[in-house]
Image 1 (cartoon, rainbow, N blue to C red):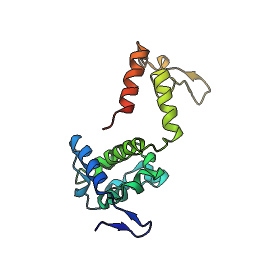
Image 2: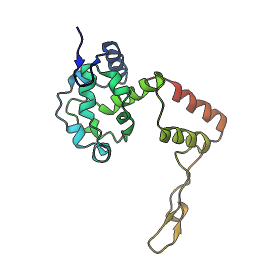
Image 3: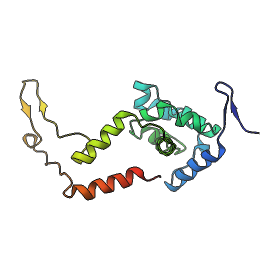
Image 4: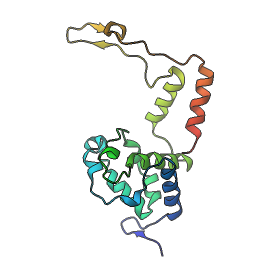
Length: 175
């Protein structure tokens, strides 16, 4: 008999849970079973403050095996990858790695990636950067560039075809 979420009547997906835990073991992080729900990860989460992401609840749902609920939820895409959840966890559970695994599983299952991620990938493929190099305006309304501040120039990929091929290979790989 498997666990059933009484609010959504969803069945637990034990095999997918094992698959995610195996992916996490490959990254040499401890698995979700060690989480004792202290919520220290959530207390430092930048996305929790803005978007109500609660990493400890995601780990709890993973422990219950409710993977489909997580994969189909838009909340997994709100993680800012600040790694505070991993730094604060006394058990080294790394909710951020769980979120990466869930995102990869969502993509593997054909779930639509939010538009912002597609735009970032397109920008990386075309510019070699997440966004184009920006200028800054001071309080005195003076426009400043990187070299004005003594910052080194940002390098862009020399061979764009090789770079694009490598990025696409990484994007299609599963962890």
